[in-house]
Amino acid sequence: MPGIAVNVAVLQEGKILLTKRDDFQVWCLPSGGVEDGESLAEAAIRETKEETGIDVKLTRVIGVYSRLGGLPDVHAVLYEAMPVGGELRIQTGETLEVDYFSYDELPEDISFGHVKRIEDAIKGAQGVSVRQQIQFTGKPAFSRKEIIELMDQSGLSPREFYLQRISDAEINEVIEVGGLWLSRSKMNK
Image (cartoon, rainbow, N blue to C red; front, side, top):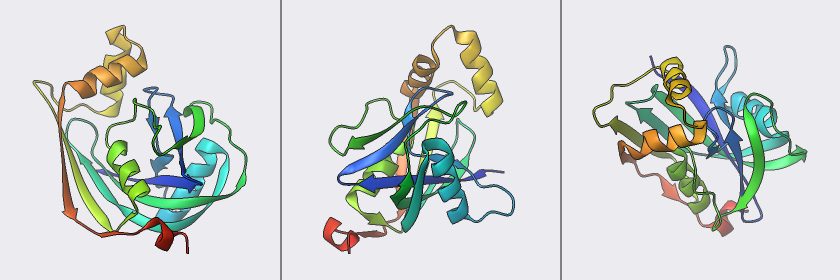
């Protein structure tokens, strides 16, 4: 059964908050799984605080993203949020770095699937549903545990392993529901 996760696009003054993952050492939105007894919104607020040190107020639902094939399947709800407190800090075992990036100076090494999510957040999407299909040429799908074992055996750094694995993949993104595109001026009201 696919997992259920949340992603959070914390936007502030033309910048977006990203975390560098500990496992694959690539950048992504604050993210994580939804725990038992927790709503999606509660998970988004908790995960952002845990991974970044920032308290947030959720401001809109951007969309739903289904990552399917080649990696463990997951359905993620992406929220936009604004910071309301806290201080930037890393979460040992989860994040190596936490920083705000201007929209036109994003890092190159961003986790698969998060590029589209970041673009949608920056461009003002609302109510989109996206199927993100990944297919590895000649490679079967693996569980997260098996991927980590392969990475450990590869002799590559986590970042090199991840980027090499993704470079061998065919990635197909299909917008299943187009949603709305809000202008920045409407979003800031």
